[in-house]
Each structure stands twice: as C-alpha cells, then as structure tokens.
View 1 (tube, rainbow over the protein chains, first blue to last red):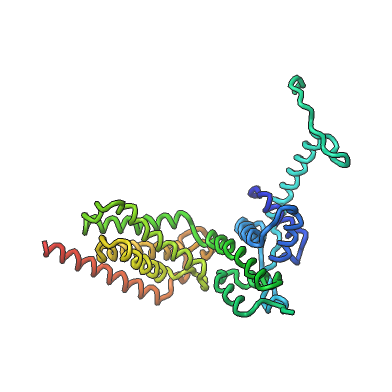
View 2 (view 1 turned 180 degrees about the vertical axis):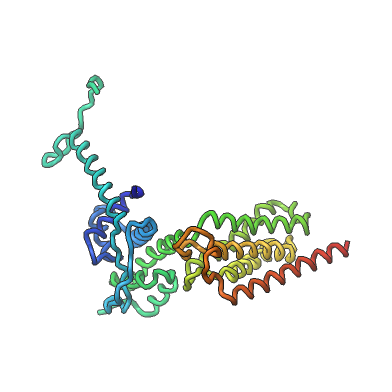
Length: 125
Length: 219
C-alpha cells in the first residue's frame, strides 16, 4: 500500500501526470501554481516535494539533452511511477468521497450559493 | 533584450547550488529570467530550499547523533582525565557540546556540496571540521588546554571517520542492500585515504602514549 500523500504532493503528482513527457521544474511549477490557485507556490517548494516523492519511489527522473534556451543546460524530466499513480488514485477516490459527503450535507452547491445545514439538536442521528 | 542573466551573477549563484542539482536548477532559473533583480530574488528564495532538501537526502539523523555523541564523549573524557579542574568552569560541560556541533555542521555541508559520488571525504571531512572547531575553541575556551582539546577532538574525529567509512551518507549508499558498505565487495575508500587514515591513527596513538608517559613520569 503506498504511503499517504499530502495535499501539495497530490498537486505536484497531478502536475506531472498532466504534463506527461514535458514535466520538469519550470512546467511543474507553473501547473502547480494553476492547480493551487489562489495560493502561491514557490519553485523551491516544488523542488523539495519532487525530491521527497523521488525518495518515496513515486516519481523517477532523468536528465534530458541540453537546450540552448537554458544556456546549454539539461532539464530534469520527471515521470510518474506505478506507486505514484496508485497514491494519486487513492487520493482522488478519498477526495471524491469527501466531496459527495459534503454535497449531501450542504445540498446542491452549484449556482445559488452555499446553504449551511440547519442546526437542529433534536434531529435524530 | 537580454536572453539570460549576467554571466558573473549566474556563476556566483551556481556556486551556491549543490553540484548534484546545479544543472537543472540553474537551467530553470535561466528559463524564468526576466531581470537581474528578479533572477536574484528567485535564486534567494529557491537555493535555501534546495540546500535543505539536499541535507535531508545526504544526512541520517541517527548517524549524526552517534557522531556528535562520539566527539562529545571523547572531549569530556579527555578533559576529565587530563585537566579535571577545567570541568568545574561555569557551564563547561554544555560549552563542550559546541565544537562537536561545529564539526558536524562542516561535515553535513561538505556532504551537500560534495562533487563526487562518496560525499565529503570520510577522513578529510572530520579533519577539516576539527580544524575549524579548534579555531573556535582557541577563541572561546581559553581555560581548556589545547592538548586536551586536540586529544579529545582527535579521538572523536577518528571514531567519526570510522563511522563514515562504515556508513556512507544515505544519498551515496549502494542501493543493492541495506548493509554496511564494507560488507559489500566494493571499493569503499580510495587507497590514498586509507594510507592517510592509518598515518593519522598512528600519530594519534603515538601522541596519546607520549602524553600518558609524560603525565605518569612527571607525577
């Protein structure tokens, strides 16, 4: 069973999944910013998380060929491993269950604003 | 329009980034470049995170504690045997914990910035750390005789060097099995380091013998 992943790790894993073969520092950071909006995400935090995920075995990396727009420096391309895919699937399933429970408690959440569940101490459990 | 940061700034920033991830981090920073100020700000925010991540990958907390305890125990033991009066100075037992911490900080940063595949040299690393700690001790521990510090610190760093030969930093360990490196048939320590290590051990043992003889016959 894969280790549990935190919210930011889920964001980074999702970014790598969506970027496919173009997942490296800059693109992962940009996608993570989009996913985490409106929270700001720093490039350093992305690097720390990528290292942690690599140590857990959820992602793997390799150096690509150097490119002139990066001053002749290589990119480190990240790939999602099977363990990372499973962890992301479990996180998505958990999030879906939470969403369904919240939607049931609050009613329909689309168009019309959020309604709080009415407080009724006498309501049977 | 500039396509990249000034060469001088990029080189200086490159020195601050650990070699293991210098290529990709510098490339990413260059790709995000808009102005020198923005580049410096981005680097200032990114480099500490990268260094901390590298420390986490190259340091084993248990091993670090063992190394600190080894040096501290040897320092206290040397002071107890050779100059017991120094221990009665105010907070001396607590202040003696600082040189081992300095040695370990030097070795930890050495592992982070090591260019090779073995981390900081297992023999030279503790020796460099001990030299810096000795300079600190001369300034801050005038009541502690130099030979006591040299003896205790030397014994401690020898133990630390042995530990580092047996247990390389995590990022540089062979991934084939979780056993001490010397159990595997690999070239663990270059021949030159073994010779230096043996020479240091011989010098240290000769010093201990000479000090004990002088103390014994002087009394």
